[in-house]
Image (tube, rainbow, N blue to C red; front, side, top):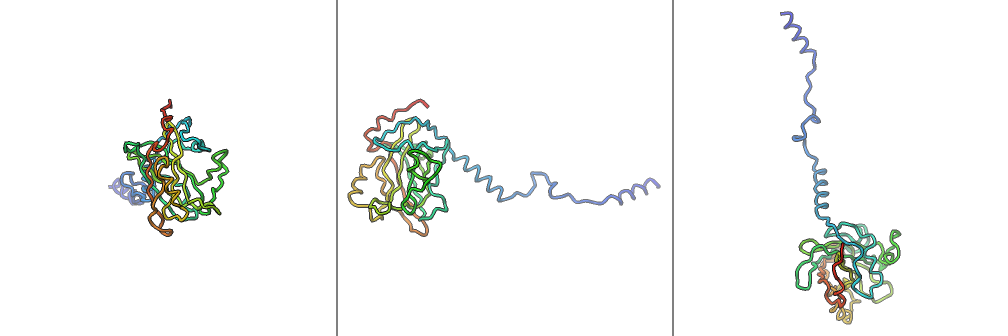
Length: 248
C-alpha cells in the first residue's frame, strides 16, 4: 500500500503538458500558402528557362548592320520565352507584343533568340553605364527571349516614344539569333495608328527582313496595348545563305 501511495504522489507532482504545435510532424503541419505560392513561382520560372546555345561566334548575316554585334553584349546563358524590356515602373503606355517564329515553310522554330531594344516614352535611348562600345547606343531598354516549342515569344514593355523633332515613326528595333548559325536585324516593330507612318514607309516594310513589322495595337493608354508580330526566319534576307551551322 505504501508503494502505491508513493506512485500516486509522484504522478500528481508531474505537470501535464499538451503537445506543442511545433512538435507536429512535418506531414501534418499546416502549410504557408504564401510560401507555397512562392515555391510554385520559382519552379515554374525555372521550368521555362532554356539554354540559349549561343556561342557568340554566330556570323552577322544582314550587311551592312552597324552595331549588330551588340546583341551578344550581356546575353544570359538561359532565357525564358517571355521577357520584359521596360521595367514595370517605367513611365509610358504599357505594351505587350507576342509572335511566332517560323521557317519559310511555316514550321514553328523553337530555340531562336529574339532581341529587342527601344526608346523611352520621350524618344531617347536611356543610358546604361554597364554597357560599352556598340551596345551603349541600344540603351538600357533591351531584352532577349527564346522561342518555346510552339515558336512563340513575348515581350512586355511600353510604347516607344518617337525621336524628338523628327518624323521617324515610333518603333522597336528587333534582331534574331539562330544559335550556332547567324544573327541579323529584322524589320522594326511599328504601329498602324502612328501618324508618322507614311504610305512610303508602309510600302517599304512589304519587303522587310523577317516580314513586315507593322502591327495593329489593340487597347488604349490606360489598360495597355496588345500586338502580334510574327517572324519568318531569313525571309527577304538575300545573304541568308551565309547562315551555315558552325561548331558550338
